[in-house]
Length: 328
Image 1 (tube, rainbow, N blue to C red):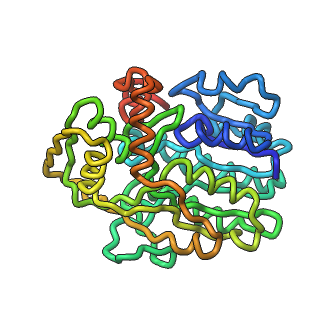
Image 2 (image 1 turned 90 degrees about the vertical axis):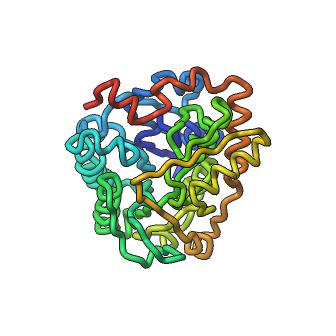
């Protein structure tokens, strides 16, 4: 499988995944709005193995064109995170559900061999179980998680001998990427510690499963190569460290070795997720190579080297960006 379509490839994960796959000699086609950073891949434009298409996955005609001569799809495109989805439920449904079902149908019709779906650990909702495994029921409590869960179910139903499918229930990602997000737990706390010298923790008891962005990239590469029988029609949790938010804050402070103040404020946010990733290690041999400390150090280096320019820019924050740009 050498010809890969990445939907939403201009986002946080895609901005690090695309150059990685190009380096591994894949031919990569990207479809994305490119709203956050229209020039994210300018430095790669001379490569014949990269084809970038500015467009919307809701455009059926364009989508069919994007699927031509493709072996595998990595589906990343979405209105990302819970608050962003709540801004416009109709938009969220059209992008995160209706368009994805059409994409799946079109991919199968186009004889795509493999469909890799970026789902989320949030599909489980709030669980008291110490080990949240793939065998437990999914009980999404947010619009974002609901459509991730429903997409998983539909994709599984479309699985066939000629159409291999897999869904990855990823933990909250962390670490640096060219199209950076500073609205993810580890990234937020590190950013505030570096620039403000103070971390504000809302609640703090909520658990967040975490995974370094480079590890999800290694995983997607693995999923392009692995045999059908190991993954087809399955879903896998993909995480590493399950920490409470207050524990992550302390870890940021310790890693940066600075006099960072940690302030805790009560919060009504009850979203608390923790997952077991034993299945993916046992069945696929996937084991993360990086941890939260690596992500913190990576972000610190990016700030110090001025890779992160104007960190107050809305492009680093999904909700703020969507509000200001009135995305429809």
